[in-house]
Length: 401
Image 1 (cartoon, rainbow, N blue to C red):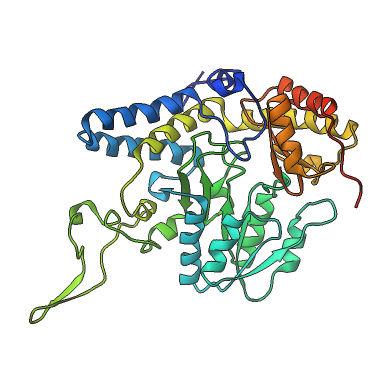
Image 2: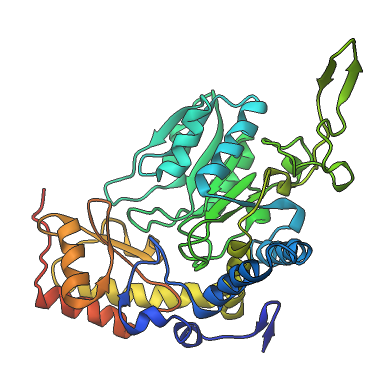
C-alpha cells in the first residue's frame, strides 16, 4: 500500500536500514537514534557534490529544501507556510517566547520535570514560570495543571512526553483547558514527534518544536518549529537577510522607510515574510535537510499509529520484565510512551557504562535512574537482551528511599 511518502514499510524494514543495530542493542532513541543508511546517503551525497563542484547546485538545494519542508509539514500536520527549520528546540522556544511577550504574556505554566529547552528560553525572555509538581505516581493530570493556574497565567508550555519518565501528557485535555481559559499553548515534542501521534490543529497549539536527532532519526544539527496560522501572519520573532520576500533579497533596507539627509540616510522598519520560514534568517546546512526529509519519509511509510502500537508492545514487555526483577518505573505504565526510567543501585551512569561495555546495550542515565527507550527499529529480542544483561551484570533496583 502506498503512503504520501512512498510504499508502506514495516518496523522490520526500518531496522534493516540501520547498520549500527548489527553492533549494538540500541535502546536510546530518547537521546538519539543511529543514522539510517538512506539518511546518511542523502547527507553525504550532498557534501560530496559540494566538494566536487562547490555550490553550483545551489538552486537545486533550495528546491530540495522546500520539498523537505512539505514532507515534514505533512508529517506534523500543518501547511508548509507554518513550518520552519530551526537549529534546535531551544532556538524554537526562544522564538516562541518572544511571541508570547509580544502578546502581553508575563507568566507561563509548565511542569517541574521539563527539559531545559522548554524552560530556559522562556526564563531568558523574562517570563515568570509556575511549575506544576507531579503526583506520587509521577503523573501530571489536567486537574493539577488547572489548580496551579493563577490569574496572571497567559500560556502553558510543556513536553508531549516527559524525557525523564516517559509520561505522556493528555494533550487533548490540556488543549481543552487552554481553550477554555484563553491560554497560549506551546508544545515541546522532542520526545514525541516520530513515536506518538501529533495533532497540532486539533490541539489548537500555537507552537510545537522538536529536534532532528531523536525519534525523527535525522541525525544531529537541525529541528522543526510549527507555528499557528495567526502567528505566521505576524512579523516574525526574528529577522535576517533571508527573512524578506524574494523580490527584496539583497537589499540592505528591504521595504524600509528611508529618509535621505546630508551625508546620512535614516532607516526604520523592514518588510519580512509572513510565514514560519522567515525564522530561517541566514545560510543553511543543506545536508541536514536532505537527511531529515529521508528520515521522515521512512517514519511516514510506517505510519505513526503503527509506530506507537509497536512501542506500546515493547514497553509492556520491558516493564513486565523489569517489575519481575524488582524494578519500579517512575511513572505509571499506562501513561508512558516509548520511555521507561527505573532507579538502580549505585550511580545510573555506571550502570549505563557497564551495559554498553559488557553487553553492547545502549541506554542513558536520566531522571535519577536508567532510561530505556524503544522505537520503531527495536524488537522484542532487544528488550530480552536488555533484561538478560540486567541479570548477568547484575544490576539491582535502588533501595526504597
